Amino acid sequence: MTAAPPAQSGERTEEPTAAATGRGGLGARDRHLVRLVCLASSGATEALAARVREVLEREEIGLGDLLEFVLHYAVYAGWPRGSELEAIVRLQWASVHGEGSEHRATWPVLESDTPLNEETTRERVRAGEEAFRTVNRVEAPRPDSPFVEAGMLAFVFGHVWRRPGLTVRERRLVAISACASAGAVHPLRHHLRSALASSDLSTADLRELIAEIDGQVPATATAALRDGLRDGRPDRPRGPDHR
Image (cartoon, helix red, strand yellow):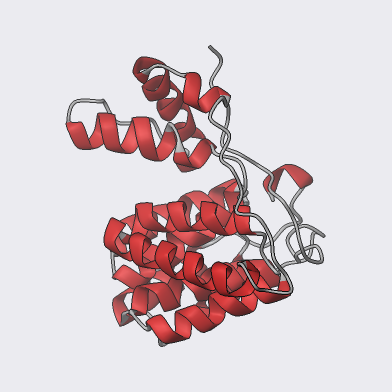
């Protein structure tokens, strides 16, 4: 079975982002994702619930993409934080679209017969190695521990990064913001290097990301982001495959 590459497209419910039009800087959808990461990581559940409700009411991010965001966030911020965010999304969606609401909608049904779900464990690990190389621009590690084989290769890169809904660029923004919020400097630097090297993020994007999260993440993370900005390559227009 041929391994599917990391997903490049998702549903869109807003104007094209700056990145999509070739202009530098974060778009509105990018900013929503970054702000949700920071709020979810801060433990400010009331503020997070208000932000999620606003996103749902304005349909700035579709529910399917929002749920994909929750999964990707949980991978990099930790399962307890992801579980808390999932619960908030469900509660706010029920409030906005549930029974008795004038904007009633149906909770989406997950497709169970997707190509990803039909892969064997061995196929998933091999696909994870390929996705790891594509995303991180380095060779994949050997599957010589449960963390690497079952966690990193089979699940994180063999499944999550290959799911539809969010683009690779958006997944990079979520991963970088989550690592910064956790103060995990080493993986943060790694994600920054690969994002800039791939041109999925530009130095203009990074400048705006720093401005967006400055004061909301540990000082060590802000310093690592600024180091990445100094080391980054000059901005250049992105083609449609680098969204």
